[in-house]
Each structure stands twice: as C-alpha cells, then as structure tokens.
Image (tube, rainbow, N blue to C red):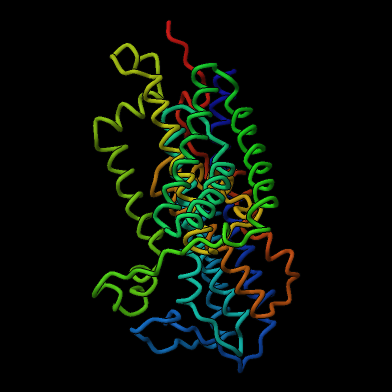
Length: 421
C-alpha cells in the first residue's frame, strides 16, 4: 500500500506541474490581449531600433502594427498553454516556458512603445552589461560549491573588491593595478571563509554571513572616512571600451557582443575556461568528486582539504573581479553598498543554471534583461509604478528559487564539512 501511494505521488507531481504551466502560459496570453492589446489604438505601430548607440554598422528600424502583433502573440501563448494542458511538452517544458516568457516580454515592449520607438539593440546591450557582475558572481558560486563549500559571502567579497579596486586604482592611477587589488581582496576573504569552514568546520552559512556583515561595515566606514572626503582616493581610471576587428562591424550583433567593456570579454573567456576545466580535465573531475563524495575522493588519494581551499580561493578572486566591474568598468567610483544584492542574485542564477557555467550565464542574462527592461520601461513612461518596475529583477529571482522552472540537483556534499578519519 505504501509503495502504491508513493507511485501515485510520483505520477501526480509531473501532472501538477503540467497543469500549472499550462494555465500559466494561457494566463500570460490572456494578459497580452486583454491587458495590452485592447489598450492600444488599432492604428498605432511600434518601431524597434536595431542599431546600438555608437555602432558603426547600422540596420534599418523594424516597425510592427501594435494591436495585430499583440493578438498573434496572445494566440501563440494560449495555444502553447493548451498543448501543455492536453499532452505536455515533457522535458521541453522549460524551453516552452522560456519561449512564452520571451513572447510576453516582446509583447510588453510592443505595448509600452506603441506609437513610439524603442532601441532593441540598446536594450540587449544594456542587458548584457547588467548580466556581467551577476554571471561572475554565479561563476564564483559554481567554483566553490562544486567542491562542496557553500559560499553566500559572494556579495561581501564583491563589495570589498569594488572598494579596493577604487582605492588601489586611485592611488596607483592604474586600472590594472586596481583590478589586482580587487582580486586580492576577494581572495583573502575567500581564504578566511575556507579557514573557518574547512579547518574549524564552522557552519558555512554563518561564516559567509559574517563576511557579508564585515564587508558592508568596513567598506562603509572607509568610504565615509576617506573616499567621500578625498575624491583623489575615489577616482580610479576606467578600462576603455574594446572591440574585436571585423566582428564588431557585423550589423546588430557586432556592437553588442564584440564592441564592449573588457569585463564582457573576460566573462566569456571565464565561461569557456571554467566549463572546459570542470568537465573536460582531470582537475575538474577531482574538483567535482570532492563536492560529490569527499570520502571516496580521499580514498583515491585526492587531497580534499587542499582542493576545497583552492576552490574558495578561486571563488573569492572571481567575486573580487566581479566587484571591480562596478568601480573600474562601469561607475568609476565607489559608493556604499553599490553591489545592491547582485551577489545573492548570482547565487540564484547558479541554482537556476544547475551549478553549470553556461546554465548560470543563461540565468544571469534573464536577470540582467529584467533589470534593463525595468529601466527602459521607466523611460518610456509605462503606466506602472516605478517601485514595481524596480522590483522586477528580485521577483524573477524569487520565481526561480521557488522552483517554477524545475528542480536543480546540487552537489551531494555541498555544505557538508569533511573530517578525515
């Protein structure tokens, strides 16, 4: 009887998710029509700019009739919802959810810019820029948690890296030296986290929280005491915009991907290197084995403690690099708590991406796009309170963590201290 009940429960869970997803798809379609489609005039059209600002390669604008476009988008969403309710998409449900979400966002833009224009290329370019620190924070989490150490201190490491990047960069009047200072600061905090959680087997959540509190307090104190009173200590040189020859001339995608901040190129490089290192090298196999079954790894001669120390060190350095993006690649000065929770959003992206580099990058793009979209909607004067628009990235984070897109599989030994027998 117990086995039969368990089997029925296992069968009911996918069906419940199928019904929820089907109703969600259909609801979004109805919102597109009754919420957006009927709010625009039949004669209105929406123009999308396909050339990012400052790009040399130009493309003609794309104009669509607002109301017919919204009607088509609504019908497609409702159709996909009906298919999900009747037969389901199976393993492709998450892909279908992504498609419906994309159609809904496009419909929102059609409605928001009805009778006006919106620069689609500029929106995507802004989304990529906003996704950089989130992606780097997510990669920091992947490195650490794949070895079995939970690192919720990424936010504090980013904040300390941002401050040290501004301070050291200002003193040396060199963005490269400032970047080295930011990476070193993040690495030191990573080693402290490893010392507490690996050597003394302290609760890893508590250790990370201590680092976050320390970083907020220390950076705010130094900022008020020195950086705000002496602007020479808070004026680091920014990294100049870089571009790849030929590729940057490609219309539409060229300026977005290949004419950008050096941190964007570094992000793509880290993505490729970390993916190859984790899943296609002996080092990666040992690194992941420590996070999955440390006792078995120890039996095979792998030094669990050294591997985990290496992981938290690299994780801290990556977080420091992410923090340097703000002061050396974007803003050009340090402000208190300027990371604004992006380290925690990076952890959500890591979970959404199932502890893989490219999965985390995809999730980071989602969060970056929601952030950029909220800013662009405010500029367009959308009849939605600005507070709700600013909540968009954090709402997306909660939706992901609630498991709407499916459950992720964390490393088996993640967060569990190892004691050598």
